[in-house]
Length: 239
Ligand SMILES: Nc1ncnc2c1ncn2[C@@H]1O[C@H](COP(=O)(O)OP(=O)(O)OP(=O)(O)O)[C@@H](O)[C@H]1O
Image (cartoon, rainbow, N blue to C red; front, side, top):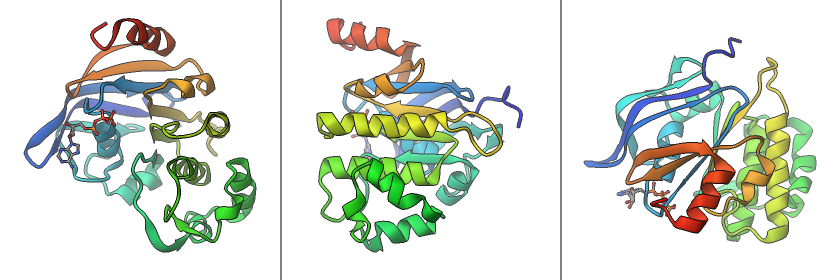
């Protein structure tokens, strides 16, 4: 595997829902082993961008290209993107009536890893429950993290993984993400992440995170994540 090619590259990407542009002119490179976070005000386009990368929801890439390991994935289906190494922990997951956690784990070839990983995320009692049916907000976030742990994507996308999660479980989710990111891929290459965060709690579990500020659908600034969050906390989004 050529690790000099970026793992994920967004090349001048514009994303639309029907006729409305929700992200524009996005150019972003995530190299192997790098951790990036997206921050920005409500409605600035963070979730739309993650969904457009994964190919989920009504989000259409109407200009530009998305490359994974140098392969143009812009027109691929969600399944094909998942097989190519992308995974997304979504913010508003659908309820999967009739599909239990165990069944879903089997479908993604989790083998015998489910009990240990479910225990790690305090979800051992959820194995026979239908996915996301009746789950609390924090339980949904923990399940989305479990899904990523089982799926083991090379490029991990997470939309507000700590949102609505209690203080103790934020650490549990954070450690699970750190474990996943620190486990090399079967070909020996390092995994990478792109994480939407409002609180910044997840930064404690990411190595050298780089932040990108979204505003009005555009990326308007990039830099050290801790510095940028500290600046925004003091001076607001216009900082
Ligand atoms: N399905 C949709 N139909 C129409 N507009 C949409 C749709 N999904 C998102 N939008 C609009 O796109 C814009 C960006 O939304 P998005 O959810 O990406 O923002 P966000 O930065 O993730 O916000 P938050 O921090 O509140 O989660 C918003 O103005 C939103 O109303």
